[in-house]
Each structure stands twice: as C-alpha cells, then as structure tokens.
Amino acid sequence: MSEIESKILEFIAADEYAAANPEINESNVFSVSTLAWDWKRQVEYKCKAGNHARAEVNYDMFRGKAIHEYLQRRFEREGWIAEFKLSKYLDDVKVGDKRVMIIGHVDLYHPDTGVIVELKSSQWSDKISESYVIQAGTYAYILHEMGLRVTNVHVIKINSKLTRYTLSDSDVTRAYHEIVTRAALAADNITKCLNSPKLDDYANE
Image 1 (cartoon, rainbow, N blue to C red):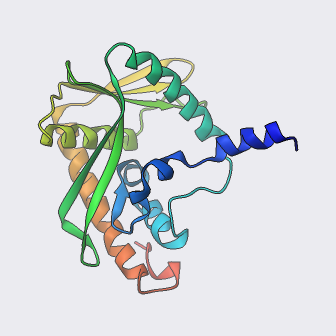
Image 2: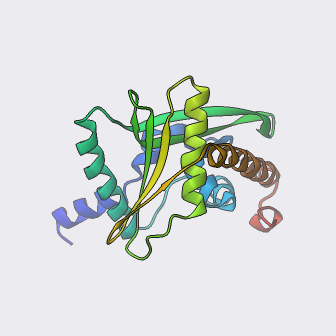
Image 3: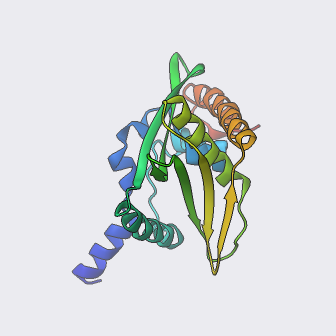
C-alpha cells in the first residue's frame, strides 16, 4: 500500500469525535445519538470496548460524514451554526456516584430563526426512523432549557430524494424523556459492569 493510500485510510478511519470530545470516554458521559440508536451500544462502548473508538473502516459512516460536512459548510455561509455542541447533567441518573452527562452536536442551528436541522443520509432507505426523532427532539429540548430560541425542528433524510419530518412539541418532550429513560438503563448496566469482568453480567435486559 502506498503512502497516499495509507493516509486516505487513516483519514477515513480517524475517530475525530472522540478526539474533539475526550470526555466521551468517561464512564458517566453518554452520547445522545448513541442512546437514541440503542442504549445497549452505549454500555458496550463503556464496558466491552473500554472507550468510544472504532477500529474498523466504516465507509457508509464516512459517506454520511462527507455529506454532512459539505452541506454544513454551505449553510455556515448563510448564518447557520454547524455542530452546535450541547450538554446536560441528569440529576437522578448516575454511574456509581457520578451524575450522568449527555452530550451531542446539532447538525445545523440558526440562532436568529431558532430552526434546528438534523441531517441523515442513507443509500438504502428514505425512512425517518424513531431514533432520528429522539435525537433531534432531545437536542431541541436541551437548547430550549439553555434559553436559546427554538421554533422548528426538522429531520431531513438524504437519499435519492429528500424526506423531511418536522417534530411537534409533544415529539420533543417525548424524545427527551425517552433519552433519560435510556440513559438510566445504560447507567445501571455500566455501574454493574464496573464491578464485573463479563459482558454477560450486564446489558441483558
């Protein structure tokens, strides 16, 4: 393999998320997007893998990331904020004696209009999944709690066509409460695994 090929693979496989957000490797810091997808995966990241890093080259993920970055650069020229970072401590959810903090990044947020856009892409389906709604709704809920303007929340799926879902106020509230429930499940199992060497002893619900 040539040097340039090695460099391309290095760029594709690089876990820039963990590098930019080192706190994600703490046992009590959870990713909103991971919880929205599957809380058991959050447990695996903390207990089985030991950290958030991904070892394999995931070309589908790279394709999605490239689409995100292309669109975000364009929107930033028009006053949007890309990868708006947010976080929130959950008072009643703990790993051991440490409160759980959930973190996430809004794909696109316009501070003047209060519009949130969560971008998704897929070669296989144009369906807006429940996990997307939970993720976007949680972001909207936290931004509102931060005192920032939130007017409309959209999930836009990019496939051979564009599919949009606009969240209602009830979607937003339901999404946040679902994330808290999933965080509590993950926290309980992570607390167990800190005292157990076997993955089978937790994440079995």
